[in-house]
Image (cartoon, rainbow over all chains, first blue to last red; front, side, top):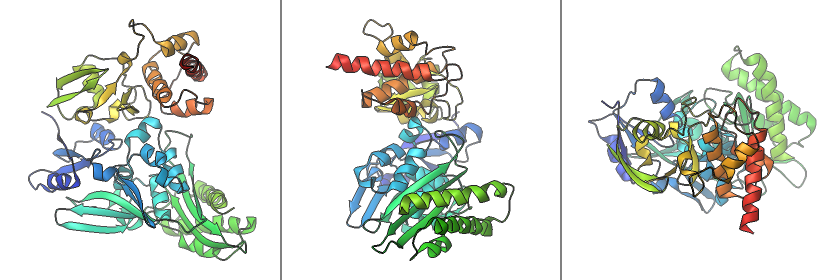
Length: 283
Length: 158
């Protein structure tokens, strides 16, 4: 007796019908890189997997004016190879830091966000880009910031019958750059100990006129560290200022998490990570 | 359920439960035991196959997800006479095989890379193999074998 059934959705409408069927507990299946590991170890709390990995509308990557649209079933490899996404360094670098080629060929951005591991590498990049998650269900649609969708480690606000269909984010101001840095045991196939996404721009006077900073694996909910951004805005990005920004990043993290067993390490590491990532985005 | 797909250039149709992995489908239902189960969680690459032109871990693909796809396993990689192809010959020549359990995955990763470029740098070869673990060779000989295969295929093409 199979533990669960499988059905492939051909469109978002079909996926919503299948996910919204009250007779069965259904869950979406995209790249499988989390779900297949999960069903190997746990008794599956669902009757059916709805395969959304080939839904054409969920594979789109396009630029509409000043907004970028990325489907939830876009794999990390497809994102990294997309001409539209090349200018978003933080997202490119985050996608290319995940797993190895085989994982990147299967795993999807929607899956990374919906699984919501605290160490998920696309989260800091998407939060840094102010990405909005778009959810659909049989009863309607809603949109919220990725940072608001994630409610804790492996927890999201996605309701039963709801499907994360795509993300949108505004393009960065002209001339702005972004970067992502990851700290793991090795370069590939590594779970992030900490990660960091930053975006920024320097004006004609040599001062920061745009900056965003979003650490990964640092806090239960990903968020922009606006406290650090405020410290940098309007200032010249000197070594001293970037060091101060690193210190402030650690302070904000500890303010949220308190002092935990890992803090002795993370306090020092996140300072260096923030400093270096900001340097790559700003200098 | 009935799962139909192209496997090593032949159409196959197989009845299997919907809750097994592509790796189990290949090994237990199609008797293709070239892909190995190492870690079963996508960390070691011993189960690597090429699905629709891309390297994937068959332990992380649900068997029915293969329906309608084109899958190439290590059994589909060989010379026209059925013997080892140029890359497999190079694995032997360069001493890239010791215990051998990772080798089907290593060859698939190498073939996936060379299907995209015949001019990879050593660094690109290392990145292409980043999801494939080998506990014997130290990797250098595997990188050498793939590098040599790329050079030979470039020469043949010219």
